Structure formats: structure tokens, C-alpha cells
Amino acid sequence: MFDYIIKNGHIYDGTENPWTKSDLGIKDGIICKIGDLNNESAKRIIYANKMAVTPGFIDTHVHSDLLCIKPEIHKIKVLQGVTTELFGQDGISVAPVSEETKPLWQKQLKGLNGDIGDWPWNSIEEYLNFLDQSDIAGNATYLVPHGAVRTLVMGFDGREATKEEMIKMRELVEEGMKQGAVGLSSGLVYPPNVFSNKEELIEICKGAAKYNGCFVVHIRNESNKSLEALEEVIDVARQSGVRLHVSHFKVAGKINRSKYEQALDKMEEARNEGIEVTFDQYPYTAGSTVFHAILPPWMHSGGTAELLEKLKDTDVQARIKEDFKNNSDYENWVLTCGWENITLTSVSTEKNRWVEGKNMVEISELLGIEPEDAAFQLLLEENAGITMLVHWGEEEVITGGMQHPLQIVGSDGIFGGKPHPRLYGTYPRVLGHFVRDKQALTLEQAVRKMTGAPAQLLRLKNRGLIKEGYAADIVIFDPDTIKDNATYEDPLQEPTGIHYVFVNGQLAAEDGKFLGATAGQVLRREGEYVETVN
Image (cartoon, rainbow, N blue to C red):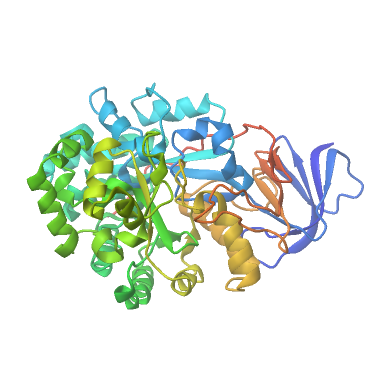
């Protein structure tokens, strides 16, 4: 007897093959049989007539590293069909740390990853074991964060690493890979990663490549110098042998629009050269990150506490204002997109809760001061614990990226306050708005970008496909009604049209309701050492 039989569904298997109409049997967390199951019995039969039956969605860019242990908060991921997430993003995450660096990272990451109190781990292995012992609704995979490794070796120093320090960092990356990480991440606009040079990136990527890991990277610039930034990481992959995956690919600003196609061409050229390159993308024309990312790199040396101390100095503020107006050598969101396109999404205190959902021009007018001064005031009052949303592009541009065969869907969702709607709506938006309404993709193509393609990127075994012997991570939805309901004005709206979600064979969501199942598992890297480029 099966635990579940799913009958008469249209199976989209994650390979981009045309759908097949078939039954599916689940037992002990595994897809045991696909075919005619009319003569078989089950504890429960689900009739999926005219519905799509797909693998569970794999989100390759998230910030759920801490709040995944709180299912009542994290449940929105399951409710939109996400059954596996990739933690450790942007080079700034929760392990490895030491007793000295842990307080720095807890303060640095509070606005991005949330707050669960003190962390009872230091190493990646201890963190993954902590997740093993926690109640998590979905599966978790992890990347070694560049910044966490860098601070273990050289603190938050705003300088380039010595060769000896680079080697120590590479050894720590290798240690993290041995402990179960599937790759390495960096965010080259965030401290302390922003202070690294290409030589450092090549050296640490060798540590990931040695264990067939990927390099998941927020490139150094996503606007005026985006092509140079992309070429940098392609060359890092070329020289280290690592597999390259570009996070939340975009080219911000109307003046840079032509660079989007050029960037796609660069990735194709790298593939033709033999470099494995992919990218992920969220289906929105606005991004979201920590608010202090608007500040120039020189402000970030020493970490958040030092940043806040410097920010009290009026001479420092004057220098920052000058950078806002004229400096294009860093990812200057103020210069590229303008204050009117920067909206605050969450703050740490009740005192300033009123700013959530307002753009910086609106906030400055209500405070009666200039946007720059409003930004400084809020960063100081909130101890930098603020997130923002930045409107950077146009939908027709991102549609071109979505149609590209190297694209993978990733949400980059951040919890808290009045978040970017991608936290609640990414996957239904692709399937409803872009597949059904705009017909920019076929359903087969979209499902592959959410399942089979990310499983291939992460080298996950027995995940990402509807196939006998594979884990029963499954989503059942109505292609005619699936819809994202989250908006920029009202982002906490759950999607509709997703009827069932299974995680490791357990029914986790039914008709838009989270059932409380915490069947998620930690998925560690599998495989041994591989020879790579030296």
C-alpha cells in the first residue's frame, strides 16, 4: 500500500519534456511508481485532474538561514511550492564563525537574516547539525560564505589579503566543503568581500572547485560597470576551475539597458569556452537588500559598529554625500536609481516603523530634511538594521533573461517588515504572469528552471525530477488559476492556485494552508575530491 497516490495529473518531470498524464505513488518519502495505479491502494488518494504535478521548487537564492527554524514564519516558502533552499548567500552568512567574529556577524546580519538570539554553533558542521535537530519545513543546502571565512583570517580589515591569508581562506573553504557545503558564495558589494581582489577570489574558489562545488556570486557591479564585473568572475572561474553561478542577474539603470544582452552573450561565450556558467533571476523589476549598502565601500571597513561610529561625523557625512552625487566606482544605488526609487522595507524599532513602505523622498519630506540626512539619521537610530527595496529596471528586459536557457528562478526573498513581494510571490508569479498570461515561457520550460536546472547546479542526488526512486518533493497546482497576490503596496499576500505541496513524502500544504509538517532535511554535498585547474 502506498502512503499517497496522485491520480490523473499532468506530470511535468523537470527535464522540459512535454507533460505526461499518469498516476504517481508515494511511499516512505520516495516516488515509488509512476504509471497506471488503478489497481493499487493508498492511505490517501489525491485526484489531480487537469492539474500540474511537478517536482518541488528549489530556490537558489534565499536569506532564510535563521528563520527557517521558525515554521510559523518560514511557511510562506512551502506555500508557494518551495521545498529546498540554498543558504549561505552573498558571502555573508552565519557560519563559520568564532567566538570573536560571531557577535560581529550577529549584528551585521540582523536586518538580513533575522534574529534568533545567540547562535549555538561556530563551524558549518555545527550549524548544519543544528538545522538537523530543528523543525524545518523544507530542505536546506549551504554555501561557504566568503565574508565569514575572511573575517576568521583577517577580521573586517578594509584591505587586500596577503598570499598567506588567501591560502588560509582557501583551506577554510575546503574545510566547509568537507563539512557538507555545496559551494562557495561571495557578495562583492558587501563588506568584507568588497575589499577582495581577483587573486583572492581565484584562490578561495580553488577550495570549492576541489570538491566540485559552485561559486555563487553577487558580482561587484550590476549597473554602470556590470560587464567588467561579470568578466571578473568569469575569469575567476576560468583560472580556478570552479563552476560559476551569478546571483540575481540584472543590469540596473536605463542608460545600461544595452549591456543586458551583452552580458548574456558573455555568459554564452564562457560556456562555449568550457566554463560552466548559469545565473538566477527573480521575476520583478526591483531588488532588495540591507539599506547600508547605499554607503560607499570605504565606510564598511571594520564592520557595522565602526561604520555607525564614523557616520556620526559631519565631515564623513559630507564625503558620503559627495560620493552619492559623483562616484560611479562602486554600486552606487543613489546615483544609478535615485532616492525616489529607494523604499525602506523594514526597521528594527517601533519608533521608526512608520517609514516601512515609503520611499526616501517621501520620508525626507515628512522629516523636513534632505534624503541624505534622513538616511544618516535612520541608519544611526536603527543601528543599521534596515532593509530597502530599489526599483532598477523594466519587465521587458527581465523577460529576455527569463527566456534564456541558462536562467534559473531564485527569489532572493528577505523576511521582515513590509518586504519585497518576491518573498511571497516569486514562483506563482513566474507560472501565472509570465507563463500563462504573457506566454513568455512554456510551462515545461518554467518548471525546469525551478526544479531540474537548480538540482543540476547544486549536484543534488535524487532531487529536482519526477522520477521513480527520487525524493517525493512534489507540487500540485492549477495552471489556469495559479497567481501571485503579493504587491509592493501589500506584500504579505499568499498566492493562490497551489493545492498540494509534499516535502519528503509528507503533505506540508493543502489548498493554501500550511499543515505544520516539518519534514525538511539538510542536504549535504555528496562526492569526493576532484582534480581541478591549479
